[in-house]
Length: 336
Image (cartoon, rainbow, N blue to C red):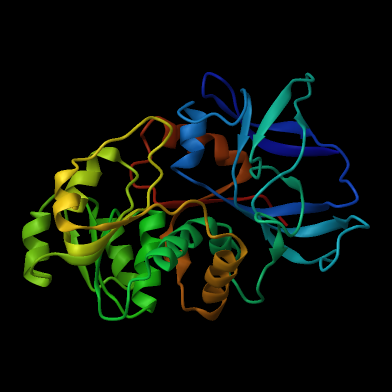
């Protein structure tokens, strides 16, 4: 089966190229991709070999929306023509020269072969949801899972340290719980999106003293602090924002290299720390997509870049070389 894919080689060159896929198995479905969402963090850690899920060349991407074109005989609950969202392309992908492509997780491809059920299986897209926004469903689900794990309560003061896509997912989820939400970032455009998603206060770390500004809002510190940058050097400054007996969530992914933070501040404050991982599986994904469909979660506000699939290599090159500094959320359109 022939398809088109976004492929990265070992020199971090990107191409929109022909690939071949196997025929789907009896427990799989075949999907024609409509949109795939870009993950600035995990995908580029793979591209730059900070994380490795397989050898180069790579086809990255782990969130997409598409239309079902084939349903295996062992699959139930999904029909041809259904719109679905999915996290994996379960294939052995080959270039025209016979070289294998590592699908990690391979969603940036015009066709996908995937499964339903399990922890990361495909599922039906809620009616009425904006497909472009829905193709970035993993990020708000990651944020929601961290919020669900830490359980900030109504009226509590929450700091979200870092207003990237995952941090914005935390902002929205905490706002919907009735928390007083304070978003911190060094990019005013991201803080503007945070306000649209429910932040009651924003602090610009590039222009303001974060701890001093927080003290004006919440003397003694926040009840709950989410560190959502994924940068190890941000852990200690974020911990300082938490009150005694508060909660601290390491919401970012800090990579495979060991990290450290000063022990005494969280020790003396007697903090409870949480380490969420992944996107909370089906329940969190269903919740954020339902909220998108109802208009409760205006996730389209996070999209700053939209490209058609043939233009995806230029976008990825710009991100990888630091030329797309204004990027927040990006989606790739693969066609009807």
